[in-house]
Image (cartoon, rainbow, N blue to C red; front, side, top):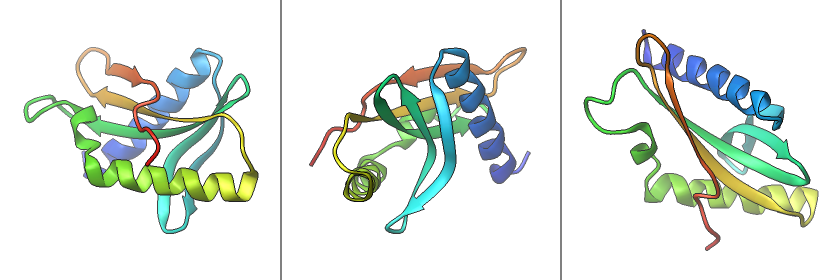
Length: 117
């Protein structure tokens, strides 16, 4: 599998995971201010910006470990742009970490992982 196909598969699995838990996905791959959010969803009244990290194995660390300082900074920037356009409201940033294991992928949902500046 190519890196792009692993990423697309991860986003599809994350979308299915969220929707199976009653979280409505309303946009994918949204770009604002030069920053991209993988998934935008609604969990009740809360808007959720979701970063999806997918790995084909855990041999070199867990997928969520790939959300480092720079990526967190980018996600905070995305949230600022989103709020400027859409107004105030409850918003959180989640990470969905997927490892493509056999027979089923492992999905871990980490909520509210990026705090404000």
